[in-house]
Image (cartoon, rainbow, N blue to C red; front, side, top):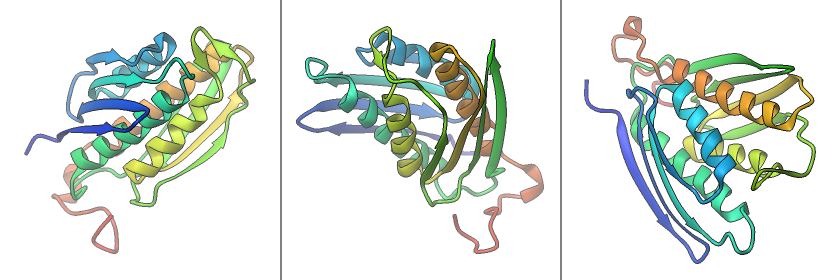
Length: 197
């Protein structure tokens, strides 16, 4: 099987980002976004997706973290899409419930080619460390849109914002791990009646 990996770079007036992803990795992460809590979330995402992930972000943090987080989602989504190629043989669908102490979050996704996020996660406005909690949704919107993934994120329980967000990133990672896995029963076919995804 050919290596399922990709490197994407993107430079704007606000951010300079490089992302490398290997879908068949071991969950290694090399992260430098300038936002400590975001690095922590991406590390959890990598570990639970079992993808190797390198993310380097130089952003306008003197403004705030919005551009860095959203643009990282854009570039990670593009890298995932590139690494998936024609999507032949993948399981396509994935879902995971992740409990994090009192928090419980579901992620369910379809690598459909139709990128969209359906978000039912109640994250209070505020900061967790140096991370604006509103940016979690922005990250997942950008990720789903640019990877061509239909992503449902739903919070079933939770009070502690750190726990809710960490459960969300872990759940998404685990759902992706399931969806990108090669299904031997497909014999290399694209898992769609259309023949393409």
